[in-house]
Image (cartoon, rainbow, N blue to C red):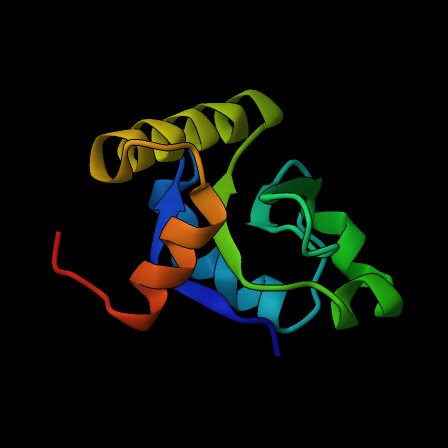
Length: 111
């Protein structure tokens, strides 16, 4: 089972159907034109942006870290990353998105 960020970032075009998207991804169903943002799998980088269809590869799915964002297209995924970067900079004064997300996951705050 995939791990989803508690305060998931959702693009405006994916928002209406987020429950269906999450359900289908968790069950391993195909979802064309959905892009996911996750913590980087290699541990050195901050985030990965990838097409949800990559999760149908067992090796990719097995090593997929926490999913932090869902978008209806690649452009929307980039907008979500920009939003995250702005929030991190306002909150911490740096650009370490990964550390900020991991810290919020451990100590969630109400928005």
